[in-house]
Amino acid sequence: MEADVYFAPGRVNLIGEHTDYNGGLVLPLAIAEGTYVMIRSREAPPARLYSASTGEEAEFDPGEIAPRGDWADYVRGVFAVLAEDRGTPPPFEALYFGDLPLGAGLSSSASMEVVTATAFASLGFALDAEEAARAGWRAENQFVGVYCGIMDQYAVALAEEGTVLFLDCGTVIYRHIPFTLKDDSIVIAHTGVYRSLAASAYNQRRRECEEALRAISETVGNKSNLGNVTREELVSARPRLTEAAGRRAEHVVEENLRVKEAVLCLEGGDPEGLGELLNLSHASLRDLYRVSSPELDTMQEISLDQPGVWGCRMTGAGFGGCVISLVRSEAVPGYLARVPDIYRGATGREPFFITVDSPGGGARKLQARW
Ligand code: GLA
Image (cartoon, rainbow, N blue to C red; front, side, top):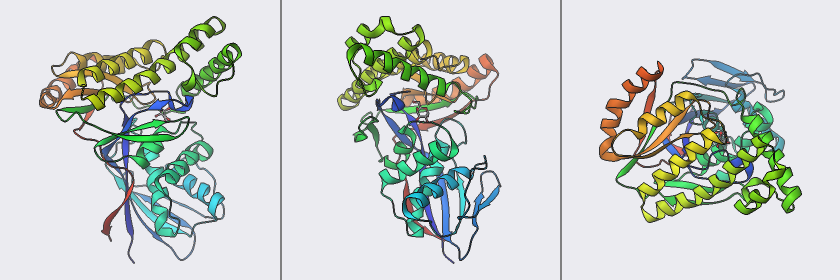
C-alpha cells in the first residue's frame, strides 16, 4: 500500500522576541532542517505512530483521545483539534523522521504539529497553510498545555523560500519579505543548553505583560495588547507599573519598533543596520525582559568578537537554546573554525551550529511516494 510524504521545517526568529503573545510583530524564517512524515490510512483503529528519530512507537484510539505526556501528544493534539472541528479523521499510521534537533529552540514541536496537520490532506482533511498553523497552535495550547504564541506554527506553515515572514500577531496579517542580503548568512549557534518552555519563566513573563497591559489601559484608555502601546503611552503609564512590569512592557514596545526597522533594513539591503538591531534586541532580552542566560550571553559575546559578524542575539524563548548571528558569508568558515573551541573553553558546554544562506520553504507535500 502506498503512503504519502510531507515535510515541515524548523524555524528561527530573526527579530521580534516575546512579542507574539503580546499581539506584536515577529520576523521568523524557516530553516532547511525539519520533520518528515510518511502517512497512510488504516482499515481499523488504533492510529499507529512511529518515530525514527527516537525509535519510539505510540498508538491511540480515535474514539478516546487524551494527552499522555509523550512525543505523540503533538500528533494526538492535532487529531483532537481536527476531530472537534470537522468530525473524526479515519485511523492512520504515520512514520516520523527528520533532521531537526529536538527541544533545541528550533520549533521541533511546531514542526511536528504542522506537518501532521498538513499530512491530514491524505486522510481527506485538506487544510490551507493558515488552517494548519492554527490547528498546530491549538494542539500545543489546548492539548499539550504549553501556552505559546502563534509565531512558531505560522512560521513553519507559511514560510516561503528566500523570504522572512513579517507577521502581525495581533491582526494575523502577514507579508513575505525577501531576504535580500545575498552576501550574508545567518549562523545559528546552539548553546548546548536544552530547555523546556513549560518549565521556564515563560508563563511568568506572560502574566507580567498582562499586568502591565491592565495598568497601561487604566492610564491611557483601553488597549487590546502591548503591541498597540506607543512609547509615549508607556512613559505616561510608567509610574503606575511595578518595576518588573515596566521593564517587560518597555522591551515589547521597543522590540516591536525594531521589527519594523529590521524590515526596512532588509528592504534597503543594510546588514549593518540589521546587525545593530539584533544587538539591541539581545541587550533588551537580557536586561529588560530577563530571559537570557550566561551561556546565551557568552555565545553572543564570542560571536560579536568574530570578523564579519554584523550582529548577534538570542532567539526563541530564551533560558538556553540558540543565538543567531548575521555574518558575511565569506567569514562563516572562520567563524565556525574558531567559535566552538572558544565557547567550549568558556562554558564547558557542547555547542552545535547550523548555517542558513537563504531561508527555506514552509510545510508541503513532497512528490515522492512510497
Ligand atoms: C517560544 C514560543 C513562541 C514565542 C517565542 C518568544 O518560541 O513558542 O510563541 O513566544 O518563544 O518570542
